[in-house]
Image 1 (cartoon, rainbow, N blue to C red):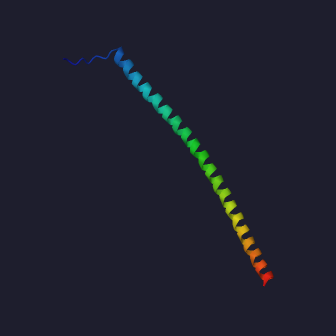
Image 2 (spheres, rainbow, N blue to C red):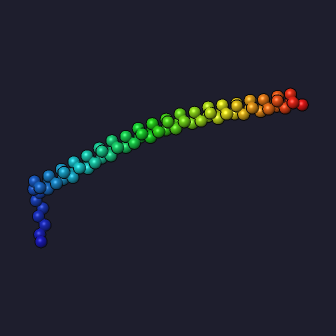
Image 3 (cartoon, rainbow, N blue to C red):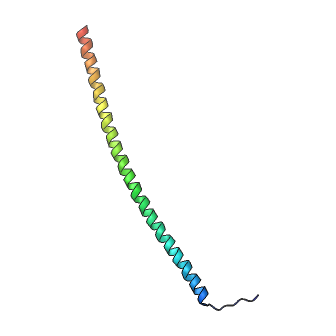
Length: 80
C-alpha cells in the first residue's frame, strides 16, 4: 500500500462537511446555553419573590404571636 499525497474533491468536501458540522454543533450549543441561562434567571427571580413573600408571612406571624401574647397577658390581668 502506497501513500498518495494528492488532494481531490472528495477530500475537500469531507473537510468542508466536518468544519460545517462543527460550526453548526457549536452554534446550537451556544443557543442552548443562552436558553438555559434565561430559564435560570427566571427561576432565580421567582425564588427571590418567594423569599420575599415568605419573609412577609414570617413578619405577619410574628406580629400575630405578639398580639396573642399581649391579649393573653391582658386576659390574665383581668382574671386576677
